Amino acid sequence: MKTYLKALYLSIALTGSVYLPSVNAADSTEMLITIAETNPVLVERLNDIALKNASLLNQLLKLADSKPAQLERLLNLAESDLETFERLITINNAKAILDEGGVSTQGIVDGGIIRT
Image (cartoon, rainbow, N blue to C red; front, side, top):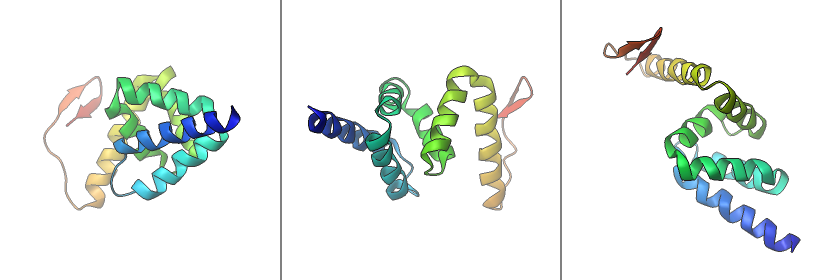
């Protein structure tokens, strides 16, 4: 039974890797396999998100930077305070734009957050 559950968790982790950003796909897949082996409850939570909101899962994985502990902290934040999590996404996206040398001038101001 334990082998069956481990195989099930690994298949869920690999299924979740479909939503990964291509830049860190190998690292993120490795992270998901590690999570599947060590934290099956987190795999279930990620699977629920993958089925309901693939965009949120993609953002979580992107922000986690292939670190399982950071992924769990971000998931907890997204579940408890979605507004703050969305602000982190906005900040991260702005940083990525600046790192690429461009500046986004289009967007909608929504309660202090500029959404592009």
